[in-house]
Image (tube, rainbow, N blue to C red):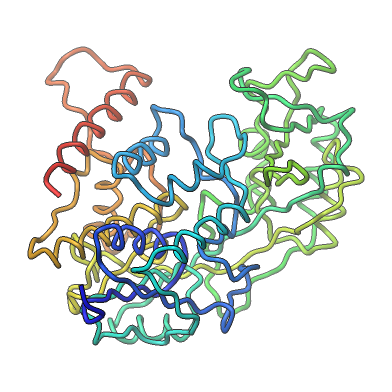
Length: 441
């Protein structure tokens, strides 16, 4: 194919990199426009592609679950980025976690080595519509200029959600006489480091967390938090045991020092292959840095914690996608322009990869003179596509993949299906449906 058939991709995040590699695999030339380092969002720290901003975890890989199902479907589609995530993974129990720097560096090498992919570092304020096809995959931290073009071009207001980042502490500053390695229900090889609270320690931590100073949103911003990344201090405002039943839940954990289940547990996950740093799982926060240091050092085992990165908060931008997109993720008013990644309303790393992959397949089909139909909503990918293209506009909010997005099982009046069996049936139905859809590509 000639350069005239080159596909433009705005943004070298997860969706953009996945789309580029899928298109190149189909023999289609790609040019990625990446704003960093010319313009960088407050949340980004590097100039590498596919930087993982919030966490190093892609969530569960254990079937049956919605998150694991989405990964299994992407594995069946031979997702390039999922393969790189597995290649650069670090121990995290039943979750897929990666060494962030190694992951991004490996993605960078894959892009650089592919002769059909070129990367240009410049801020794109409006898409290059003279290209035959363009994917906007700028992510929820897109530059204000690009967001302004989107909102003014399509006469729709964007959604604004606040997202928060968890702190990272140095491994050698943790008290291992208190903290211990274990996985819930003794599954896996004890990949998580656990800091156990008794009730008195929990009460002190809870009270100090509620009193802690907070970074408040500016008055003109409508403060809405994405529920799956709720700041820990916001969760604490919901009640005394909100944390003990949420990010600090102790179920399935036994303290080897006491032989008993703790009142609450803060789990830490390895941040890299060298295991020299850990992030505090579920501790997304908007606390000021001094308050993070003061309050989080009340966590048992973290009295002398050295913070390699403090938590922070940033505003994510999403589009009202059901008003704008067709079933192949192209714009209704500009059919050669596509939207993918978190900016279209799919929250999460794997979800971003999925929409980037699907947008690339849609363009590849168009180039072949075909029009793609999305997978059935029985599949995880199909359920995500349906959410961002046919949801009720008035009730549309960004979401991760979850069981509520799938259509109900048909049991034709037979016996009641148990919860565990229901999950298994939903996953097996989805996998078989995805396999059938794949054969039609």
